[in-house]
Length: 159
Image (cartoon, rainbow, N blue to C red; front, top):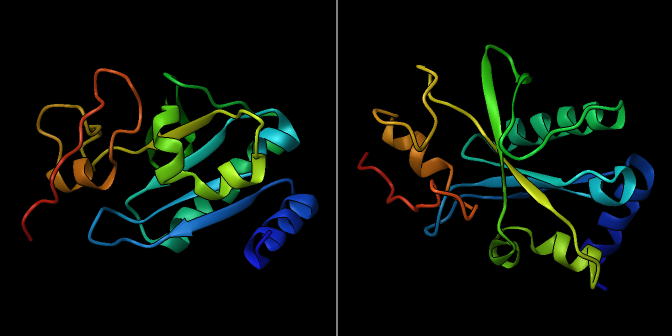
């Protein structure tokens, strides 16, 4: 077990979850996700991508606090309680994406299965990545991680 894994376990023990942040690189946008929600609260882990990493961590900690207080988020459902002024929706993350996007969670849970949700936000006009007319950057910033009809990857838009 690495020092990072030990620190992650300690955070989950103290708070009920931890947030893992991954910076943007040549392969895709930055993202962050929770580890521990499943173990602590029986709730799927949550991933969000495409915004500043500090903002992503704040959003996930807010989601974690809501879950700790009894809220439930589920695939195919939206919420107006996550981002001020904008709805979000949740999609189930396909297990095939776990190794690429939820590596610390995979190590944390070991042989135990767990579920994970992708929290998806709209552009300023309220359009989600799969909607016609959505801002291309919003589409790129939130890769499709589900097996659903919107499971498509998009190239980074030209700057």
